[in-house]
Image (tube, rainbow over all chains, first blue to last red; front, side, top):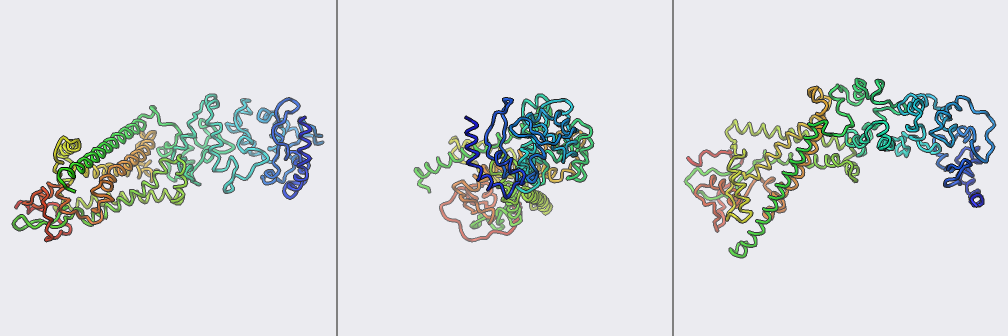
Length: 316
Length: 268
């Protein structure tokens, strides 16, 4: 039933697909994309798990990897109706694929294949607090390539103006927030879910939210692929390293200056600003109430005198 | 500020109007009002940055960078204006031209109490106000306090690395939060206060609507003075009754430019 439906779909889309893809995608990819461009929705693989087989040919062609062959990354087909490529997969990639298998159960070889071109970045990620969680602790949490950069077939340059990349300046805070605002992850690793909202409230975050193009975002201070825990002495934001970090934008930054950014909520553990804010709110409330009352009384007296004086004294 | 000093035998003919604010004061007020509005417009979106439309509004000002520069320029203008004001008052004091009657005293409390009684219909007449009534004094000192709190914190936020040199080390963990809370919450208070209080009293009240023109002309009609500041009227025009006379004021007499605050000859 499902197969017959699929065939009908494919037959209908075949000529359209050829006409559409010819000018853009890599020529060798055509034979893959003709089908995979049309394969919408989720399919049940042979192991009973869902598989997403759709590749948007147009987006792929427009992506930074658009001129690469499918088999550059899909070195081996794990579970499929196709004949797998003949060449043996390099042993280092197979090793890496085992380490990252939990991040891509469907095709770990393809996820490991990024290392073929991006080996330095892969090394940085491995060393980072995110990578260490996966590679050393064997946890499922912590992002690898695709968790931040999005679908491998649709990666666009992050630096371009108006970029839709999840790691582009405009989107990177939300991308970090996908995990760093999640309660379960925060509880597990003991970090605060307020980080993103506190950033939004900070001097930098306000400017960023109002459309700033120069205010720092998460990656500006914490690093990108080599992001380290704040407790790591090598972290850019650790201790005295901050002087250098903040000093890049604020020449002359001293210890008292760099203490300004904490991402901590103003709570009772920091009583002076906490109670100062409470006092100011009460003061505002009292002043405004008193003013409002005075204005209302004034209006009442004005109406009363206007009506009464007109009536009894004949004055205008 | 005041008009005409009657040097001959009282009662003198009443002028049509009296001068309340000389040109220097009027310019100070205009600069203050202008910079206040700019600070309000650019700062509001910063305080409510998460609200839809704030980014679009900031865009109208040329984006957050330019809006920030405009905000700082307006802030420094306001601070300079305030410094000039204090300096100008000191100058007038030295020349013996300053009356200290903007300072609140016990009589203002009594006036406020009696005004509320009047509002409620418990007293037949309004209190007989002096040159500045308690509302005006409150307005003035609220700005004074606001400039001090918002100006000091604003300077620290404008020059944070310089401020960090001055701040003591033991304050580093709370001073920045305190400074930003002071700046933004006190500014909110100032804005709401001005919109509520100042706009009602000087713009919306039926007797001044659409606004009291005194901030441009500096002058107030003698009739209005008699009505709203009877004690001051009596001080300026001894011999005239502060109770409004039916006859219109004479057109004789003129206002004096920049008169002394303290016309010593009145009781001589």
